[in-house]
Image (cartoon, rainbow, N blue to C red; front, side, top):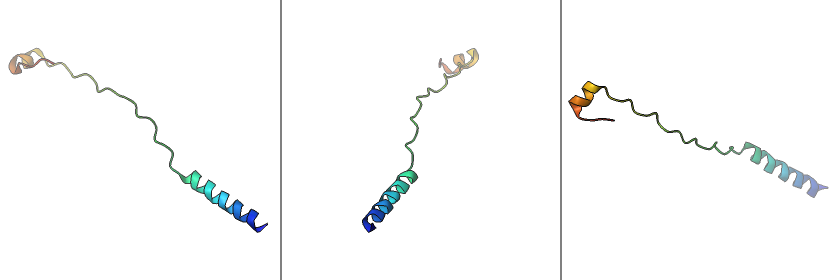
Length: 51
């Protein structure tokens, strides 16, 4: 009887530790950044850059 109670206590301890374990993080979503805003014509002429 004592071994049965000890095994129940051990199983209960293992289950309580498993319940407190942190859940795995959700998978990361591959989000692309928004496209760059086009420079206005004057700025493109002044800087020589076109995006």
